Image 1 (cartoon, chains in turn cyan, purple):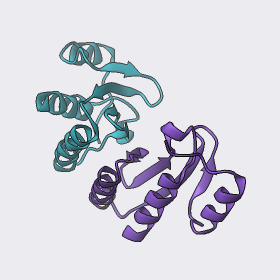
Image 2 (tube, one colour):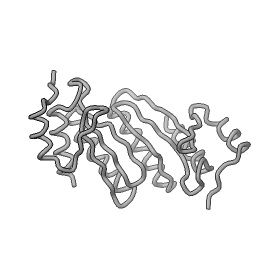
Image 3 (cartoon, chains in turn cyan, orange):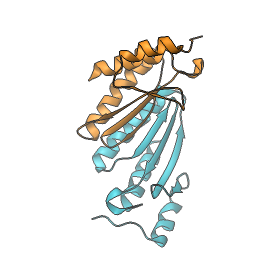
Amino acid sequence: MIAKLDGEERALALRDLPEWAAVQEPDGIRRLFTFKDFTAAFGFMTQVALLAEKADHHPEWSNVYNRVDIILTTHDAGGLSRRDIDLAKQIDALL
Amino acid sequence: MIAKLDGEERALALRDLPEWAAVQEPDGIRRLFTFKDFTAAFGFMTQVALLAEKADHHPEWSNVYNRVDIILTTHDAGGLSRRDIDLAKQIDALL
């Protein structure tokens, strides 16, 4: 069972993810991405999908044309966990 | 400029798309899809992305693990148009 991050762990972890914002429903982190067009946005989504499947940890996400909205949360932990932080860092590294 | 479907055209078109529901905000049609797992869901999304790019008509869509939620609407028409109906039929034909 993966644990939800406590207040201090969360603050420390988010310091490394300045582009991600904490969200409440669900308890997690969110980042919005804008690309040149749909092909660029979906190409990015494909890269994220491969990372997510490899990590066995999947985003809640949406796409409208050139915009991608990603929320990371850990259902098994009931909120933000280390898994979300790790995946967020891998996603940031794609850019 | 593509035209929004009028009431009669809309009713006729939706008769061929029994799995799609009319939605108000945005004015369009929506279908929810459930797959075995994330890989199957994202594989489907990749097929839809290729159809959408080819048609130059893109969905508003979201994914959570094995679920895909697709809304089709035509911004240039201010609502549901023939382009949405055509893409919906192509999406249905993938399954």
